[in-house]
Amino acid sequence: MNKTDLVNEIAAKASLSKVAAKDALDAVLESISQALANEDKVQLLGFGTFAVTEKPAREGLNPRTKEKIQIPARKVVKFKPAAGLGK
Image (cartoon, rainbow, N blue to C red; front, top):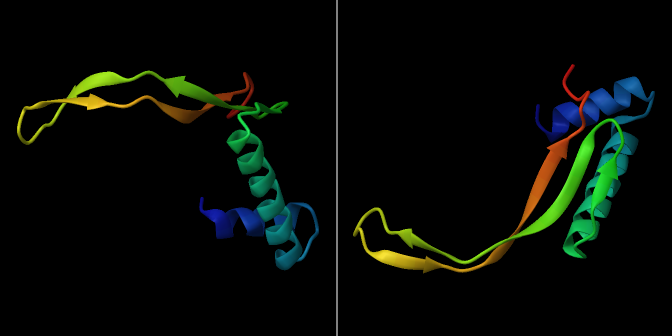
């Protein structure tokens, strides 16, 4: 399912126009992105939790040259689904 399909589903299930559904989805996604940028946790009951975690620096291997390289530390977004999601 892509964003257009999701907008169509929201419009149909919430009796909204496609424009209103797209605006609502964009607002939700922007709010989640902004919270994650501030390193806040986003918990949606019945759906799951988005959280920012830190991956430590590590040593890797360049597959082309087999040379060892240093991979810097970075922050990544992780999603943990709710127990009942997908049933």
